[in-house]
Length: 257
Ligand SMILES: [Zn+2]
Ligand SMILES: [Zn+2]
Image (cartoon, rainbow, N blue to C red; front, side, top):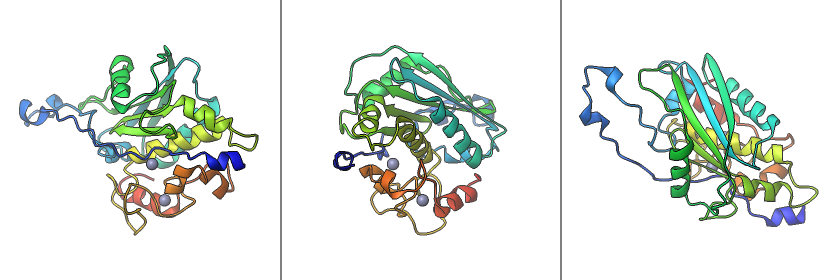
């Protein structure tokens, strides 16, 4: 317990300002929506409505690539799926996992991760389609900027988990959270950012956004900043922190459930 407390765990808290400007607005004919491209390199939370609602995309498919040796537990995948089923208004929710070669190039910068995505991602959202495609990659290393970060949501449909950091946290002490617990929490938290929480793509319905980041002021919420310190696992009674009522109200007001 003491050892675990010393480990400062940051679960993703980058609203990374990576904006790749596409010129789709000027290069397409506005009269023909089928020619407009879906920008998969917009900022975190910018496609929140597309995650939550079914107006444009009635289905969601998540491609989860893991580097060899860092396969997420089946329980974590099931847990993410039930989380999405509970919050997204979609006809179908699919998570496809596949193994990709280990690179051994860690620690990884966000830029390196975007290159891995370009190499490995197979599915992108088509503006004229009915399926929103999202991408999660589990890498075999740590984040170069901060070795305690467990995951990041770096583009509007793109997220990464740091397998080595998750392993370290879940095996640091006999009282540490299990690998599945950590994975459950990180996966939900990162997708939560791309669902526009908190106040970053999905407008807040009450005053519960932290001042300096897209997080919730409720210490026990999935989107709380206390998640960043790893203390979240000691603050909660269940396995995985839940979204609190304030965050759920935000999602409902933006077309989720
Ligand atoms: Zn966060
Ligand atoms: Zn909350």
